[in-house]
Image (tube, rainbow, N blue to C red; front, side):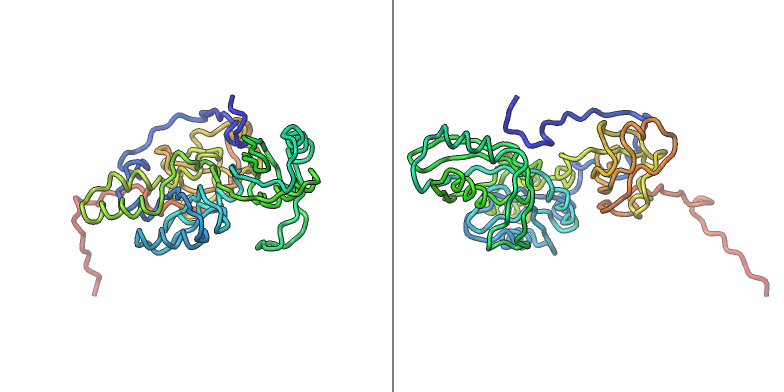
Length: 345
């Protein structure tokens, strides 16, 4: 088993069936079948952020390339840091909140101020920089400088060339890698600083689905000028991919529209769910066509949902699905003819 896995990547989620159900193909739409214009306004792109611009500037570039009203990125990278930067598009921008707490992975180069044996570096990492660590944000940070606890899932030396060291680290969101390297240098008594850093994972997004701003520009050109959407559809992912790391609850077609209006999810509306959901877990509430309806907070565990006939299963926090997509179409009465009644005079 690969030891370089973020916590959610180690979980194998089983699906528990509460009540078998089918979905009406006339309602909603499978994510992969959405029209191209719809995915432009309701999708997510995994951009290979270059060194130089800020994360906000890269997000703005995406917005201008696609000619959309808004965009939002997940997990700010410093201007000189490059790599994985998921950017949500237009109506999907709020999905970045689902990624903000997900784990991150980085590969980088640190420079030791004095040479030290690789064995000593590994021993120091194992003793002080794995599991829960304490960090004080650097002076140039956007948050209050107070001590905070962060989880380091893995921290490995990949290669050493004199005083330059190539490393890989998987960590909780909000970990300052530059500070991590500085603190390691302090523990080694040699001093150290970071030369280069690249993000290789942000939650479910990694380098396998990475595209450059130029790739996006070219794909959009082909779509607009040559009516070829093949490349654009390869780059823009369904918004549902941003919740791949979350436990899920699938609901009946008849439950969907009330959730779109912000109603809470009750047990009778549930068809199936992932196991191991605990109270207060963030869950993705899905249709039977795998469309994201909303993010919610679990108020019952998986075990309780399966066992109970009634109850408050989850509180809806952020609704993404448009209202009315699962509202049953009511056929017109009298063959569609209006009946005109004269009012008494």
